[in-house]
Every structure is written in C-alpha cells, then in structure tokens.
Length: 151
Length: 151
Image 1 (spheres, each protein chain N blue to C red):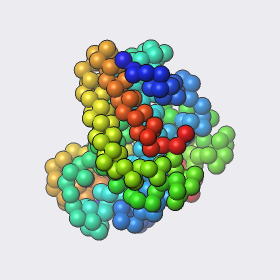
Image 2: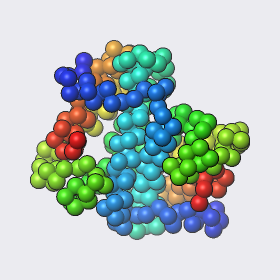
Image 3: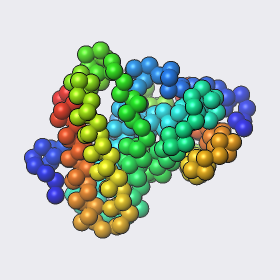
C-alpha cells in the first residue's frame, strides 16, 4: 500500500494520538488556530474591508478550511496540564480553562456553530450574509480569548 | 455587524494578504502542514496501524480537515524569497523550489488530488480503501519533501 522504505519512514514520523506529548499537543492546536487566522484574514480582506476583490471560490475555500479545522476534534489537544501553569510560555492557555470546562465547552460549541454558519453563507455567495456570519464567528473567537487566553 | 470595540480590535489583528510579511507567510504555511500532519497521524493510528480503534466520524473529520487545508490556496504562501537562502532556519523550503515551479506545481496538484481522494474514501467507511488512499497521499507528501524540503 505504502510505496517503498522512504514512505514508510515518513509514516513512522506521524505520531499516534496516545503518544503525543503536551508540547506536541500545543504545537498542533496552535497550528490549527494560526491556519484559521490566515483564512479569517482572507475573508476579512475580501468581504469586510474590501481591501481585496471578492472572489467567491477563495472565500468558500477559506471558510471551508476554518470549518473543517474547527470540526476536526481539537478538544483532544486540550488535555489537563497544557496551560501556562505547567507549560510556561509555550502556550497562552490560562489554567482557568480547566476549572471551567463547562464554559469552555460552551464557547467551543458556539465557535463551531458560527464557523459552520460562515461556511454555509460563503457557499451562498451573498456578501452581506457572509459579512454578518464573519462578524458572528469573530465574536466567538474573541469570547474564548477573553476568558481563557493570556494577552 | 461586528459587536463592540473588542471584536473590532480582534479583527484589526487579522492581516490582509497583501500585507503579509515573509515570516508570516512561513508561519501560516507551517501551521497548515502541521495541522495536516496531526490529522494524518489520527488516520494512520486508526486505519493503518490499528493502534487506536477505528471511528468513522473521526477519520472523516480528519480527512476533511486535510483536504480543506490543501484546497485553501496555500500556493499564495510560497512567494519568491521565502526559501532558506533568504529566510535561514525559519523555513525548510529549498531555494530549488523557485527554480522548478513547474515541478512544484505538479507535486502540489498530485498532493491535492490524493488528499481529496482520501476524503472521499474516508466518507465511504471502507477501511481497506481508506488505507490505500492514505498510502497514496503519504507518497505525495514525501515526493515534495524529498525534492524541496531540507532534512
């Protein structure tokens, strides 16, 4: 199935989930948020600021990437012990996160719902609706940053 | 549309594409590849190694994230001047990339095709087919690493 020794070596570098160290979990969750931020920036430029011309297929692709990342089970990357109290400046996650998991889960559900809505509005091609959905999604980002991310 | 000053400040931190610096472009493309690697690892654990139980919805979500990232226009994150000759150890991209753009584009198309196939096979729920598609996708990762990424 996998072609040759080289590909087997590549695969050997892919760590299974149970083996992930806290610093790897932090790296992967940061990667997800950073890549979402890049795509939020593209939608903002084309639909909110108008600083770049609106191209439907680019906004759809950006919104789909954000939604697919949000839907990929990132909660698994937030195990106990991965906040600033244990991991220092490797992360900006406040320890309060783990004392308020119900609230964190609620914010995560709001976020996922909002970016799924953004993806469906992107598909509509209606810029006013995309702009509204973008604003709602951005609010759900900020809600979690305000409560659980250090400045 | 956007609620309050706080959300406006958040939005102000989202940089539009034309303003991105080389180091930001490198950060975002690394984020995309790292997040794809996390999701490849999940599929490998469940479908290739069997080190974790197969859960269709998790494999579908992982494959969708990989495909959506691959389809999000990452080529924009590879402008001239963002290889090791100019950016040092911020990147592993070899300068050869920019001298062989036809080859790079071909490898990128192979990669995108393979991860889209992986996503559609994931949706089928047929583990043998997912395993085959995973191996093919991994080969397209390695092909680009071999030619254009430093060790």
